[in-house]
Length: 93
Length: 298
Picture 1: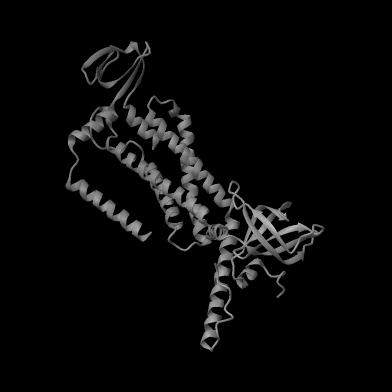
Picture 2: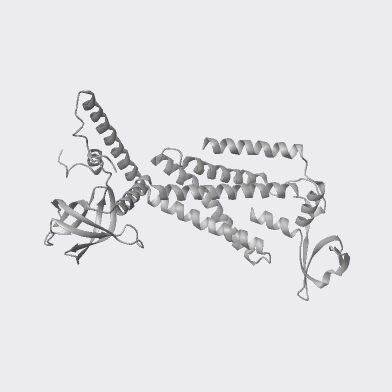
């Protein structure tokens, strides 16, 4: 047990040291952020679109996808779910 | 003190072999034909005992087929009756000694007694439950840190912030510490005591209530309807963990008296062994020949 606890403490210290010595690649941070930030649009015709809502007003939404961006009328959307994965994480923990 | 009026713990201190209380099915054979089905009440590496009606005739030497586990093949042996003690309900307690047992069967009996006395199964399941809870708590804490870092994504910007209250973090830390407490108290490298077992089970209870409430919350939030397989896998694993820990806690609390008895019994047995060893040492020092040495524990 003592060995296990010492191992845990050393592992935690190494992790903290590595965090400060080798900073995480900003691109990776942004990728994770974008994944957590992804929104889901449930359209009236049954289709589901996963992308990023970059601008919205009362009439329409500007949605960004991996391949480009497009506008859609708000009335064509049945439901919007913002930050899908982040919400899942919050609900799961 | 009369042998039959002494407690099982006092009797155990005098015995060479550790005797355990069991309820194992067995069949008596006489002249190679099945004679009677019985239930073994006590088992040791040197013999066993069972209860039988007074009117049943029993030869001095007989064969017995004993099943140590429900689906294991029966163990065959020849026994000699050593004592017959009448019981208040009109039946008899028959104490027998092994006469012919194969080496393999002897090992199987020893192994069974060792596992029973060492309480390997109850301690191992509590240890496993505590370990899985520690993993679950670590994962939840890690996800908490991630959501805290990316917590303010509603504004589509990246900057750290707290999305879930710090009270929840305290709850998660308590969950982790209780799981770790159970893991430490039930550690197999430490001496197995009743207090360790009790504290292990007690430490498992709050984490169990936590994951039970979380699973109920998942149902209420309809997370099971998620389109993502990963979310469903996580929910499934969490539910499995909840059932496993619940089973361990329930069985642990139910088996507390049994664990206490077994630990007391083994302690008395070890005490008896130590005192016999000391006596034997004293005899050897005072010029004993060593011929009257007691039969060694197998």
